[in-house]
Image (cartoon, rainbow over all chains, first blue to last red; front, top):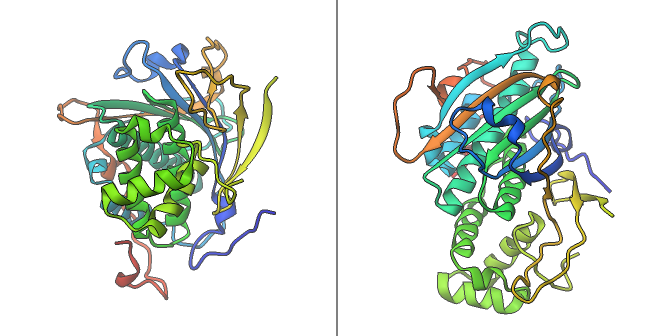
Length: 239
Length: 93
């Protein structure tokens, strides 16, 4: 059952973002769309629907959301945007001048930046590029391509970014868990043998002892990493 | 061969991704149940479906180039009247 959980002063969570599909590959057809794409670089592709009701009066002030994001991901401030590489004004199906259209484009664009930053942070990339492509129809759909050297990190970054944005758009705060989740993903990425562990208990014990975190704090983080495709843990409580 | 699966996280993020049948190998024992679909197509019709494209990049060592702006500048600053319940203490930290 999917609950349409109401949010305080924000969007109903269910309505905002929906990842339709995640793929991984070179996608040579989009290489020319960002001159900074490295030839033959692998990319994660996320098909994303951004559904913000036009009449919504929630907290849609994106600059304030960006400020919250920068607290979590400070390197976001160093990102560069080559805005509007092209815009198909002939289509007539997407009106980029309406506030609503700009709003959903900004949200998709933020999602791209979060994915870039997360996976750069986790894998230690020195540079990373991406594009956000808005569909003519439906106008709320976007393809996001981000250079990514690890498929699972790409998938984690996409899920995490969507979760994060939904939370902020719903005017909900970010708990310490969000910070810890990034740290843990980075730690596990650099510890391949532990990352390949498939049993929850020994993994929890090892992380608790090495990072000095309480087991009851580590457990939900590992579940989240599993939910986001980063780990393959087996546990009776995990479905 | 490929099954469309529905993925749901605790915040009701519903996601359909491709689950691929994978064969475990000795060298690669870790197989996530959720796999991004491998895709290497040259889809010539892909670009025609887009109305607009925004491009972005991140470099640890910043380079100055024309036609680039900071993300914080890309999101236009708008001022909205303060709503009830908006208090500075409710921000993340």
